[in-house]
Amino acid sequence: MKNRLAPINRIPPEVLTLIPDWDTDYNDQGVIALTHVCRAWREVFISRSSLWTDFDCVDADKTRVYLERSKSCPINLRLQRMADSSPNDPSLPPHDPFFQVIPRAIGRLKSLFIGATPGNLQEIIDHLSHPAPLLDELSINGGFEPQRNAVLTAALFNGNLSSLHFLLLRTVRTQLPWRNMVNLTSFMLSHPPPGGPSIVQLLDFFESAPRLLDIQLHPTTWTSGAPDGRLVSLPCLKKMGIIGEEPSSLLLNHLLIPVGARLTTQIAPRGSLIEDHLPRSLNNLKNLSNFTRIRLCVGGPHPHMRFTGPNGQVAMFPVASPVDPARLELESLVQFDTSEAERLDIDHDVLSSIDLLYQALLPMKNLRTLTLSKFSYVYATIHFLHLNLNLSRVVVCPKLVELILVPHTNGEGLDIRSVVDMAAARAARGAKLSTVRIVAGQEELDPRGVSELRKYVSHVEYGLDVGDLSDNSDSDEDEDSDDSDEDSDGSDEED
Image (tube, rainbow, N blue to C red; front, side):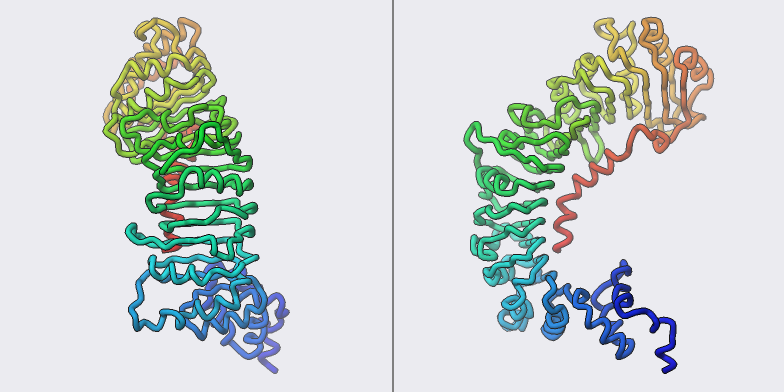
């Protein structure tokens, strides 16, 4: 009687069973512990079937208990079989709990995550031939043995994957017909074995999945192209990532990337220009038109070229190449129409071609903000902005109003005399800068130089930290990391 009057026991059972939903560290051991508190709690928590829907199929008795307590609720299975079994291993069929559960539970599958060696994976896949009408997420990781790959056939779930929203396939050989994918929104194909799938198969797949929002192909080697003139629309696409050695254009030539989408390609150019990895017709990339910001980064851990605008984003990441990456990016940049660009951010360790930099800056008639990083690079660019010193004596970037300098002086003094001279020359020709922002310690700048600069620039800030450049959004760097790590994130979940 005293126990019944305790405050905790005054909570209605329907509220009590919601407690695990608010525990961010909730796991199955936690809910089992709740059933051991007292008889009343045991009855309450066992009665809520949705608490017993996550299986790992490691222990046969536990698996049977969970299957019984979950009643008719959709279930989530996670299988880790990353070590090959010996002939006498009790985990081999028919002793493995998974093979005892699946015949009567496959129709209740909501999500299935499998991480297994090729041998174990093939055994598991062969038992997945019955329909799974509730299956929402499917993730299959076939390990890291390129000489052995499990094969997904058209018999998988009786060939019907129409309920899927998320599909991840890693290191598996697939002969799926790529059909009945009408509800799929996220697709990742990681480390496919050599020889497949072909571009034609991928295009067939994309046509059968018109609601795709996110596509990740990491890494890929195209086996063949598709017939000229074939175009596949991806009307719902928000994000697409491609990592591969062969030109991405072999696939992008046949895809219509819509306005608002973000496309990221990580490529090994092998001497080719970056535009070789864009489709033959830039009309395919609706999100590349009217870009307003360009970011060039060479020499860091993630060299890249990114175009951003009101319609979306295109980013290209050249990986190790015998070609000078700075020249590779600048040669590609001068091929594009940059007349509408309003912002340019350049972060280079080494400048290999002054002429190419000048050719890239000259067409940018509407550029308003220019960010220059790295000490050795700043002065070369200022040389072109100086009306009396640039090669053609014309006003380069005539609408430029903001100059952001991140010189990386490493504590050494920064001579801004060239900046003062450039600002004075532009002011005399009606191309006055309104703002100069310098990321450097106050002790690194000559106060007299700053005072002189203020005669020609109305707003001068110095002694700043990179974090003070709120307009120079760090989100680009975050996106770089996301794109580069995306493949590993997807696989880690299964390993």
